[in-house]
Image (cartoon, rainbow over all chains, first blue to last red; front, side, top):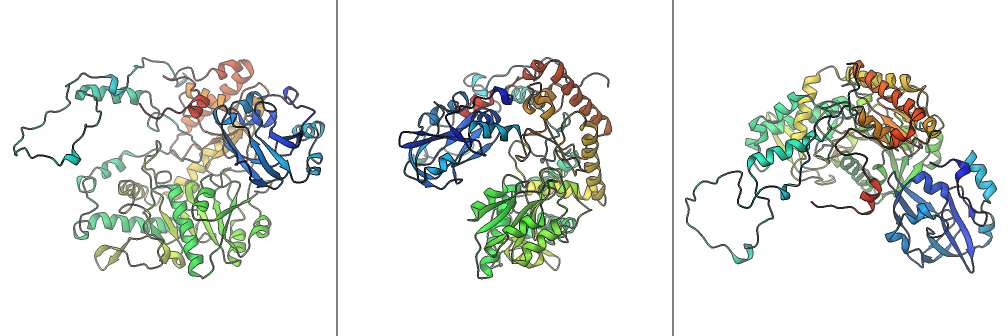
Length: 132
Length: 484
């Protein structure tokens, strides 16, 4: 597994304590799991995502990610309605491992309260959590 | 023995059965037909199954070679945590092959099945005595099936009280199947976080327990191998709100003859005969997961029940509150038979069984705790949980350690479970292993820890001795091939 200094943690996304990330792209917020999360999980073999049009509150479980080690729940970084999911993950779940912030994004939502995004952690704050 | 147990030897490759044989070859000759030919209904006529054409020797060699690739309790130590891979004494197999039992048909009338019914009736009594929960059904076929039966009993109990409930509390140190069993009965599972010492805190349960909660499912000892010291207080809190306490008895091997499960407040408990009572398991079954309940819950047990009227044993369906039938016929009878044989063989020594199981786990824990990180340093029960924290510094993970153990001739322990411990290595030696074997295992673990420092890549490339080297688990999960 990677040492903390080896992790890829972009400055332009926000992080949660549960290791999801979120980023504003135009009118929507895109989300996925962090490099730390994919590294801890190991090879990902299946990603289960909700249907477009469903709505979730911040912190609510929206799907699961299955690796060779375990099945883990995914939690909403912020609340909102799902506008798109990354269909590519159905055939290529390994994108979450190889490219967690770009090809491995999970879904896009219309935020119910845009201020929730600002309240998420910056890279520096997230690093503090990882360092424990 | 001074040498490492694992070594190399001649191992045979073996094709699939369909790749062997020759058209027309047979393994047996059928007797000459002595009845007239009769036309079959056209609806029954079709192509036969695709069976390979093989001689008896082709088949015997095939399965003998496959068995040589295998590893079982009869080959070596199998410290798979939470699975209680204890030795299965051969006398149990001998009793199970007695023709009167082995050939018994489940549709025989009761008058011709008295021996089998008596055995089931007596087994219920023994399990009731061992657990302190006197009413028993031996019908469920597995631990998870016992859990499901237990949750059906929870639901039936609350329904009968006139107020169905919707939630079940499940600690983070319970077995992974517990939430699924609750969900199948329509309950929502509510997680309870264990305290800093790895055991449940009464206040955490009190905070979540309410009158819409059917009860709690507790694995005790829990999946960290720790005894839930606060179980009695937790049970009182749940009972005060009208809830029930389910005990996952998969870890019963630690407490037999020591803890009376009824006295600590458990209302329903399942046992795994294929773990604690030494019947063979692995490979998916068959198993047996009897449920033991308090007298108050007896009316809800599955039917048919085995009962005794005077000197006659019979099957009784007349329990109107019963959750119904949970298995075809009466469960996996052959497994019940082996467990019965084991119980009679052990006799009055059940307490010693558990004491040795706990002693062996604590011996491993103490001998290895300087080498491997021990997340909860307190006396354990029948299993102990380490992590790969120290080895991570050398980029060696739990998976590498587990794979390397195969080269030493040991089955790997359970890994990455329980989930509350990152990189968990969960070791359950059971009472079967001698001190010499435990010492060999400890030496192997220490050598592997040294190797993690000296040659991390040797571990990444392990196992090196078995017929099949490291499998590509990711490819198998992403592109499963499910037929020959």
